[in-house]
Image (cartoon, one colour):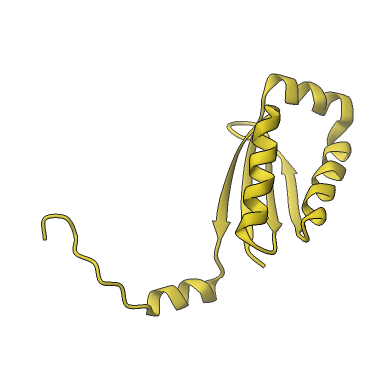
Length: 106
């Protein structure tokens, strides 16, 4: 399954919701969303600094990740960034592929 790194920052309203529900309440909500689309939460951490929460999730396909991203962003409670993660084998495979490319000005 494709794996994604999700970094999120709560808006003021999202932070109020976190204070009301607590971290375990948010974890339950995340689990419900991810498993509902056939995915799995590998890790979930709260943080402070630029991002308030960091997750690693598996989804059956990138469209599932996009569906979650659109829905979460539309809520206005979080600003998110999802980064696809690749395995070592996937990068090795990419390195073996021939790509026709000409650099600008070359």
